[in-house]
Amino acid sequence: MASFIPEHAGRAAVETVGSRDPSGPMAEDLRAVNERLLLSGLREQAARADAERLAAEHMAVLAQIADGVVIADPAASVTFVNDAARRLDARLHLGTSLKVYAASGHCRMLDGRPYPLAAIPVIRALGGETVVGAQLRILRDDGTEVTVRTSGAPLTLADGRRLGAVWTLQEISAEHALAHEPLLPDFVAGTLAINFHHPRVTLRGELVKLTALEYKLLCQLAANAGRVLPTQVLLARVWASEYEATRDCLKVYISRLRAKIEPSDEAPHIETVRGLGYRFVRPPLPGTRQAAHTGGRPSA
Image 1 (cartoon, rainbow, N blue to C red):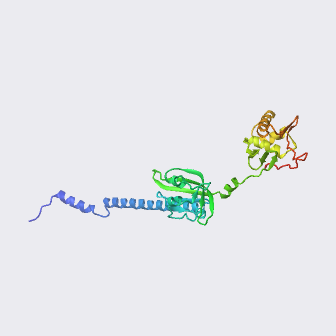
Image 2 (image 1 turned 120 degrees about the horizontal axis):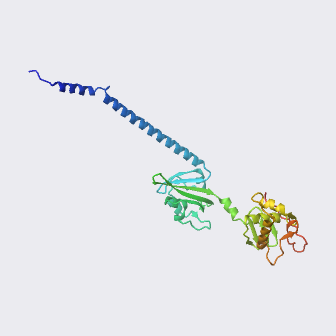
Image 3 (image 1 turned 180 degrees about the vertical axis):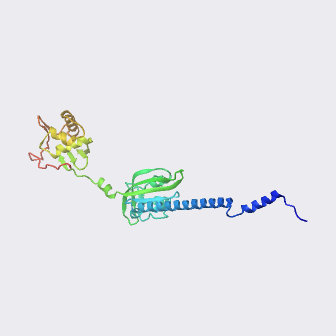
């Protein structure tokens, strides 16, 4: 018996078969989706490669910096250390626990006492603080020590997640030694002592607090001790072009200087030469009429 197939069912069957055609609209849509996924994957791969290249370039720059640079993860384990940091202390290397390192007692305060663990800049930075310019001493395994200026800052992502901390170390051993080395004065007049290359003036061993202009004025007078410096010369050398200073302004500063450097029980140092200017007078050395030492000159 012949089977009867409705006409609409036959058309559906033909359409179904046609929809499986690899050249049909559905196949084209699938190919387009696949192409978009492929392109997206390629772009992501390229972005990852760019990020890795940029990170490598940054690490290469950090490796060449003259100051020590140490990067630690949130667990305080060192993930990066440059050569400068290793030269400061060979115990700083990849994998070092900075908490163990800091607690070892090798980090000291400038007076020699152990640096409190919680106060060390990198430990504070791991806790979220930013520390700038702290000074400490590092005792090395070979028995030597270095003085460093150190800073610490947390490393965070844009969403606030912490990546760890960066710790920088700059050796200042020579600078520290110079700062604590006793300075010999360049000029002495009785109990007054002046350093021309460091802004330091003492009277009877005590530091005299002078403003920058007072110090410049005193240096000009002392460097030309015994000679009259005309008013206009002093105004030009001390005030230069900072602002229009006047004779009255100079008189005020001379008066201030006298009050600070001339004790009432000693002969005055600054002499007014009427109609001309001012002269710095040094007391004669014992047994002489005139001081033989003329002092130096301040740097230009």
